[in-house]
Length: 395
Image 1 (tube, one colour):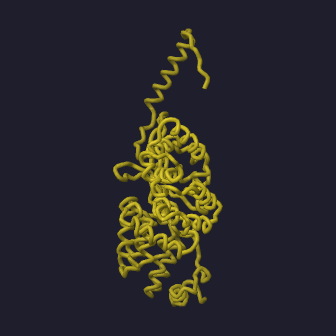
Image 2 (tube, one colour):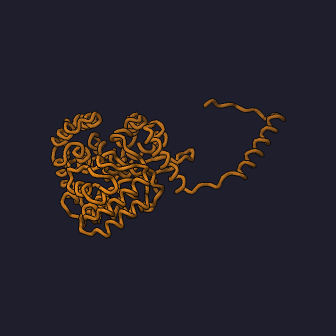
Image 3 (cartoon, rainbow, N blue to C red):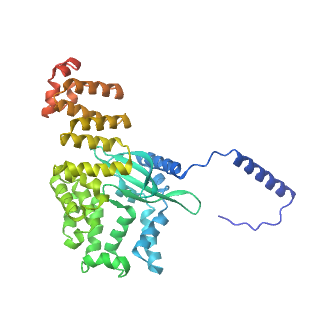
């Protein structure tokens, strides 16, 4: 911005200045009430979700204070002097490019849903749920502060499916690459000291992951020393990769997470699948309860709770949770399908058909036999029931 050396104002300048002062004072008198911090967070979360759904990563990036994010990483790594300055310059080159947001957040074409502001661990955060095309879910906690201009910006965010904040992930990754032998870095690099090609391997893994070559990336990751593979960041990375490869690998990686870090509440969301595979519905429900306490009333979590309760032999409680999910978010279809499926499994075909009617009314849709996978015994029994035939017709 150009600076001007102003001389003493003449009469016209003084008049304009007074008019401007009067105008701004009058405007201030009629200004809208100041929003609370929680309301501002709510609005920011809504903007974040809208931009992500539009895949407008430049607009999303403008919601971040990347300088503060880079500084937080430097602080936790205890970097100082010229090394810190050079480190932050390099990091900002990456953070100021939308590509890193794609790497962290974009998997297919998910839907981002703002869930409002919520107080977690004593601080308000903007909560965003991610609904994937495959039926899975994730949660983000946007942590915000005001910059020097007074604008509310994102300075970090927690990802439920990794159990880590982005700053912590960047700290762990940087520590694996830096050769700085001091403070927290020394502790972190002690595990992989002597691994000369580590930096190249991490770079390869990230490149392969961005190209969708998950199996190749996972193979390189498994070649790292056990002491490195057991670190939280690498275990989390391994799970993200294996979830895109096969159930067998995914289950093995989840089992490893449970053994190494299963006692940490922040991994509760990640471990729900592990408990499900192990048919440990007690711990699966406990982990779901932790998430509900954290995020409040949410259709995805209520649907999950309802399904787990049914699997645990508590059908009435399961139906209650599924109805609560429908009430919370009437336009989220998953809970309707779950309710219909469990009614059919219990041979309550009329109730299953009634649920179909609710779905038709809610989503302006008409069911046909083709909508049901009759290779599944439960769906086959529903399609062949008298209640279904009376509504839809004979298959």
